Picture 1: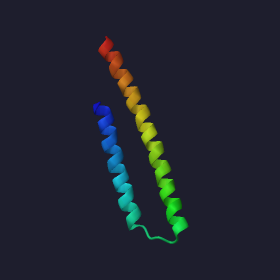
Picture 2 (picture 1 turned 90 degrees about the vertical axis):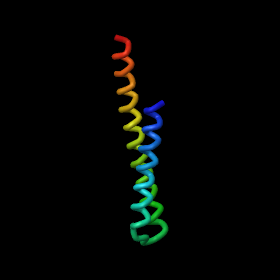
Picture 3 (picture 1 turned 60 degrees about the vertical axis):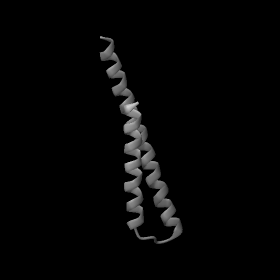
Length: 68
């Protein structure tokens, strides 16, 4: 439960930081803005998936240690 809450908090803070950076960037055109936003969202999704894999690995390790 704590791990999922921690992931949610991390994702929220990451999205907030990305949103603040997007607001500060100059908008050259609507297409350029959409493309940059999509790129950032894909990177964020990749990072969240990677973090989930790490959390799963740590959870398995903890489970193994609890079983000893």
